[in-house]
Length: 391
Image (cartoon, rainbow, N blue to C red; front, top):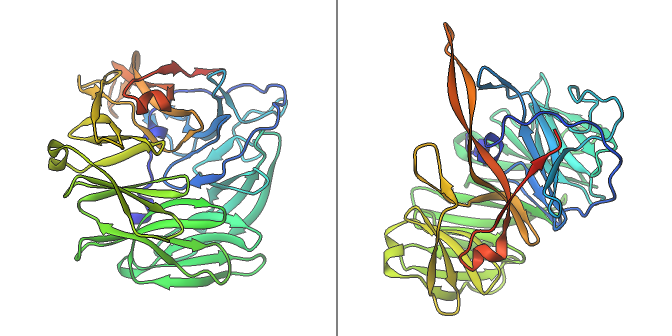
């Protein structure tokens, strides 16, 4: 199901961390200005909230053992998001406990929003204080649609969700307690990706696979919401990146990098043209500060000067278990301020492999979480600092 194509690679990268003990209540933290919907991270200039699966039996992951951790950029320390004395962190009473659920947004007061599945297919929506001191049940709402639904936000109007319909069509729905789901608008386009919620505006992509066209839309999360077209592009050759108030596009057909405002005004403005060899591949924009950009093509990462188009290959930090280059990729929602969270390199450890009829020892390779210097990466250099866990 297209609605379930959320980036899970960062969650799978560190399944082995245990629950941390309670600690003194931390100082108030900054909260995200925007929430990226294609991952389980919410980054700020001060740190990043991350949902991790900590359940593992015989090298097999349990999907109902997720917890929220907070990583402070300055100290590079990872702590469980719970400050309750004596908490065992294994039930929904724990602020850090997510179970089989997901992190799907933040509120204006900084509370993190957690969706935990209920037996009837709906979700219990919890609000978690950003310092891990409190957890409050906000609502218990049924599924927004029979064909699946994805929670995308919560505000004074209610809880918002995208409900998938037959053939890939979808509706934007709102749940207002103690009522029911109300359809705000429906669309026949195939819902492809949720991008982010920012300032109560939901950004998402739809694809017309037959025409090979994609569209980035914006819809204000309000009861009179109607989608507005931000930009259209070729779905098979163009990829986009939302940064700040702009959307950046990399067209592999022409090698052109363009930019336009997220409010949908103005036409895309070409910024630079990439070298000929880049046009043999899909070009993925990774990050930008407006003057430089990191893009990936052909299995490599490149730092590009947007004024000249000059590119510099970024040498990998190491290799993966197969001996292939391990590039410093970071995922949606994990970049905030000067830093980003990334899988820096691999560590090996002894493990146990359970085949169902026998148990054998094996070597496991786990990704080491690191803090990545974003500006250094934009200049073509990898600067990593290991994330240390208090668990």
